[in-house]
Image 1: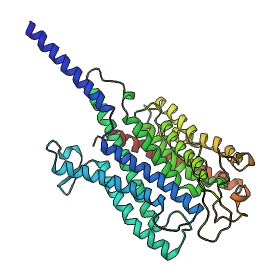
Image 2 (image 1 turned 180 degrees about the horizontal axis):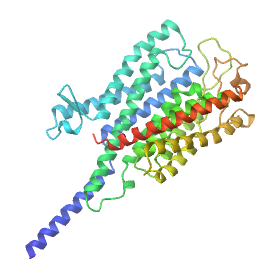
Image 3 (image 1 turned 90 degrees about the horizontal axis):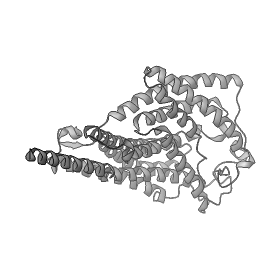
Image 4 (image 1 turned 90 degrees about the vertical axis):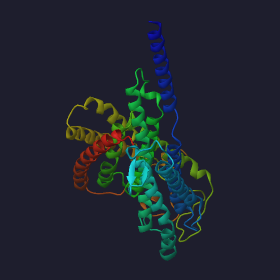
Length: 408
């Protein structure tokens, strides 16, 4: 009997140590994931900085600090994930192909890691292409040029890789908690917050690459809401579904909002003046991007509605979530746009004096006016926006469900 009691005590002690070790592991971010999150942050910072550089100074050299931040992010992501692939493939006896994705039957690595490697290759390949493009054609008229399209593909792939690595860690930690008796609450893990953070960076990326359709002077056009309905329900619904947080979409939108607010407040603190003509507007400080869209409010609505309709069919969920997004977004962004074009917004907080030096003083942004269209055009565009919002939300549900299932 004493031997049985000793064995039971030993088993309980061993189980306690195992659970304690699991909790300690959950509080630590794997170094590869930390490196990729740093890389994704560096890419976003460099991208925003580069756009500001173009609006303030013009492209005077390839070796700008903004470019260095961008390509540092790509290099860190590629090297960190490349090291992990080599380690798993040749130097880890405990690793198996089931632990990740196998390429050419020889190299084993995490799915998110492979995406980061491919994204890094695309980014670094775009660098000489972009340098040649500017030497041949001068300043970009639009954000998306052929080299920028390749660079954007690299951006998105690295950010997607970071997100997939984060959800994989989140999923494995959730499995360990479910497998161990008395596992801790999900909120004890850092992984869901990392997922929300990387999701917020993805949301910021989507916003930046559609910024030409989100200028404040077009916020009373139906096309503004068409583009918003195409892009943002997908990201917010996917965040709500994939992040193991009660308010996953809200946390993701909050990261996006903070990123855009920080650049809005910090960039004008630094002096800057044009070095490339033609100079149409006097600029003395770095020009920031616009105040963030009010995505926090529809994100909160999505988080509140989703648990109540979780047992419904996927298409009904998508319809309700998509319509909710568009209704809240239009009800808040439309009147807020009136404020943004008013003189009341000309202060450090909203910073609506962010006029690029290439913009003539008689353009709508400089005049603080809206672009106009007929009521019929607006109503027709809102009808299209409803359909796109539902489709976007449906895609977000599927993408979020898949992300939540990722373990490697």
